[in-house]
Image 1 (cartoon, rainbow, N blue to C red):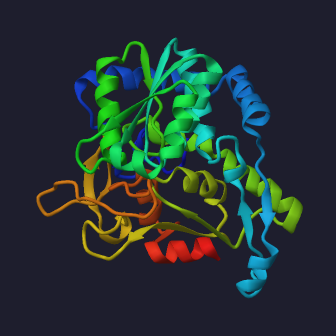
Image 2 (cartoon, rainbow, N blue to C red; image 1 turned 60 degrees about the vertical axis):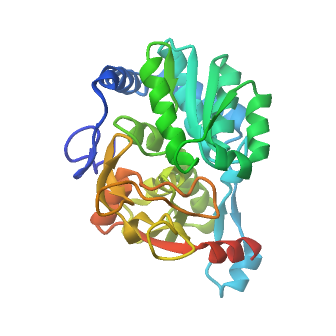
Length: 343
């Protein structure tokens, strides 16, 4: 459990909590109790670690980018290669953990939302591995942008349900997944894909991704002679990969940490997904956090060239860590992100 949880489980300072219909409270209690119990059991941890090693391919490499180091003027640049994890992203860390948790809870079906498609692919993969039925919700706009991942999910045996409401992106896929869970809560576990939503999801997802930073710490010690970086940097959509990296260095005062949001095409509301640049306190999908919203409290539209980073809220632990001055947050626009990709 993070030291940031100052109001008890589910809160990070004044952020987080459970703001959901009464019909979900029992399911969240069941999930929290199961996770708190199972995560302490050696057998569960051993089974997950074995899957991460033998199926997912952990540890992922820490690669010293020599030419990029030279190009940028000499700072030693290391890349934590989560893209080399099985299915192509960090998402499998969490999906394997949560599907294993669902199986232990006696659930025979899992559901998930996905934006870029990576979490959907990871959940479909984990469900196929462990023999559970999977249904993935995905916005129609994201399905067009990520057609190959849609086909991968279907090849893995998952049902992909298009969501044509609202902006037809990640926010709307989460809405539909929550409606499904309310209806089928006895047989179904919702594999939420980022450090979002009502407690216990932000801490469950964070804990399953802490392996990223823990590995990086050991690898830095071996390769660079010190187990901490001067600077740790990661993109922030909901914030799961970044919190997974940052968590290992929160107590290391010599490490500066920067989270990078989607700056889109401009600063006005609707043209970006930079919650720390234009968000205000609100509640979305069951958690109290920074939200992009208009003066009447209606959720604003967002934009990013990256499917999955265009979510209008951010994980509550990120807001707390920003308030504490421990992590800095900035944004880059679409063109800057494309230029960096080409570099």
